[in-house]
Amino acid sequence: MNGKAKAGKLYVMGVGPGAGDLITVRAARILAGLDVVYAPTGKRGAQSLAHTIIAEYLSPTTEVCTYHFLMQGSRAAKEAVWDEVAQTLREEVINGRKVGFITLGDPMLFSTWVFLLQRMLLKQTLLQQTPSRQMTPPSWLEIVPGITSFSAISAVSAMPLAMENQTLAVISCTASETVLEQALLHYDCIVLMKVYSRFSLIRDLLYRHNLLRHAVMMADATLPTEQCWRDLATLPLHEKNAGQELSYFSTILINKNWQLSR
Image (tube, rainbow, N blue to C red):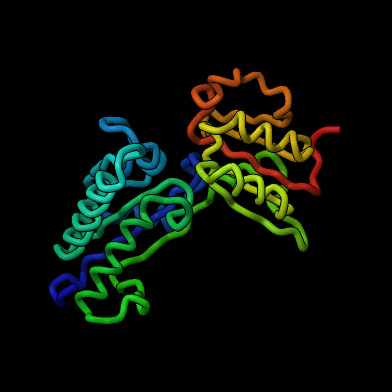
């Protein structure tokens, strides 16, 4: 950044799992003073859930821009979007604006924001001619953490994420069956995210390792459409259509020292 752009700043904020009153006080204060906020959406033309969460905190003068991030498609197509958004955000800051970028949950966990961050840090190191291993956040960037979906699920379901000396793994169910099974075998507590597309497999793995009574699943945590299942063995989902019936925002918590059913 040059001297002219010192007034500009990019705030990247996690807006939590869904309920508007679960964003942080810091994020709410920042949102009120933004010139422009960028909100992601997974479907072209669809309303951004992240924007819905923070709408009440925005000033009437704040410009809202929605970007479609590809959920499916080639790697090259996804990278083209990441390149475009990263460059757009950087240009906004250069122009001296207070810019927000919002993301569900926490921006540093399974978030598209991380791919934008990589590009910004690489650009920064090229401009400063510093080794890539010394990448540090620029002064014009602030990342505000947010409440994760599994933290909310733990609270709503009253199931501890981990206790005392227990080990904890957070896994996306896009991982291979081998990786998922190894996590179930070697960790005391497991968070399984993005369950919606592989529920039948996950339920089979939990049954195989006698973990069904230690697991809880929740969809759309803290939203009006929230659903919670404490007995996955009898969950009435058709095997072939489980992925279509479950919300994209479905997560399973497992704690081997916490038994939900007898």
